[in-house]
Image (cartoon, rainbow, N blue to C red; front, side, top):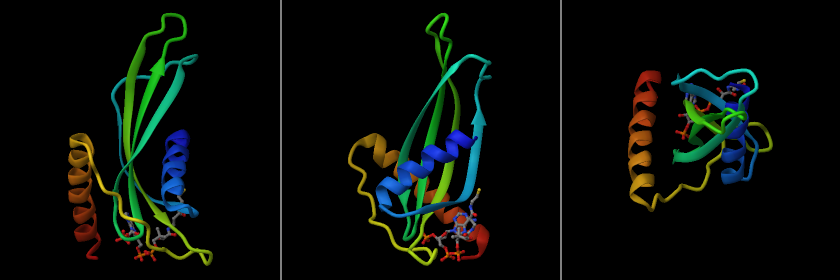
Length: 122
Ligand SMILES: CC(C)(COP(=O)(O)OP(=O)(O)OC[C@H]1O[C@@H](n2cnc3c(N)ncnc32)[C@H](O)[C@@H]1OP(=O)(O)O)[C@@H](O)C(=O)NCCC(=O)NCCS
């Protein structure tokens, strides 16, 4: 979980070029167990930008170093917020999805963004 939060922070920070904070861990699916001795790899993608928020999707894979077998063990969605020098939310550049995969990811994330706003009464 710590690694998931860290890579999401790196991806969001890299996009915003500012400090970011985690506002929400929307979901964490554990598809398969991770065993002691497995090597983990994490793949994080910026799925969506709101005004100051960024949704990052993180995939976790575990490699059995004895056999080389790699298993997709988890997926998480996090909302990160860009902060200005005073620690207040600040606008980020919107992303422009290009590939069909990016557009699909973006549309799903946009729907989650709206659902979160409705949930919070924003
Ligand atoms: C996240 C935080 C900066 C939001 O501050 P705020 O004063 O509520 O800011 P705003 O109402 O202006 O919202 C800023 C953005 O955060 C989003 N947001 C706020 N609360 C959210 C939540 N619970 N989940 C998802 N997004 C959230 C808003 O939608 C908005 O995004 P947008 O600009 O893209 O529409 C503030 O609540 C905070 O600092 N929380 C503590 C974070 C923390 O300590 N994280 C570490 C966890 S280990």
